[in-house]
Length: 288
Image 1 (tube, rainbow, N blue to C red):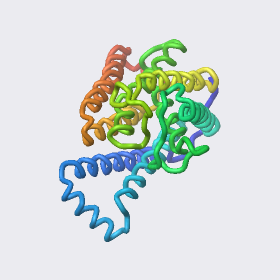
Image 2: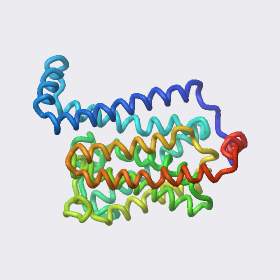
Image 3: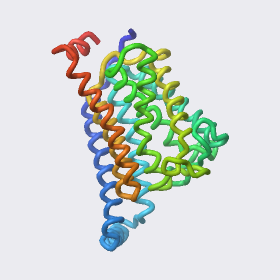
């Protein structure tokens, strides 16, 4: 297994600081959504005060918090795995996950394969070739590395890890797609699908794309040597965010299903830890 280069000093501190900001953006977005729906008069007054003192409109606040969230997500993953991957392999992981994600999205938005026919709106900013927002491909990298890490804790064997990693990505999408296409229009499907407007083929596309990305991490780029502290929290935060958006914007059942989807890997991870011999996790880290 290749050896990682030394990570820059302060990497862990930088991760904690960025994760704190990441959680603050999530809390701000969820609180704003709840206020808009539960107390529109109070929300209007708050937005008026913000506009009077900062000049920011509601759309600018939504775009700003969304872009900050989307930019922090790949940064957090990069910082989290930098100590064991080193700068060179970290950049290779980033390039591979983003490139495969971008390719799948560009093909998908123009042909409907493999996700079903869909198109992005303008809330996520400028687009690659006018179709896919630049912020989208790095998010494939960000969550797929975390899913790969968690999959390695749940099972053994190259193909089982690839399939488990792809499955964890699909579980993330259980609440993400309803939140971002039905509750909030970041993208839209051209046909009215059976799952909150989403065609079930979308999950097949997610699984296939994620499996290719995870396979590349594991087989082409040397894989991960040890579990990263903070990976479970990062995964859970990214699942809970769209769950909360679903609950705030009247897609409650999607939020409930998303919570159930999150409970599955968390329960399996807990069970797996309980089955490990005492000190096994520590010995693995030392051996790495």
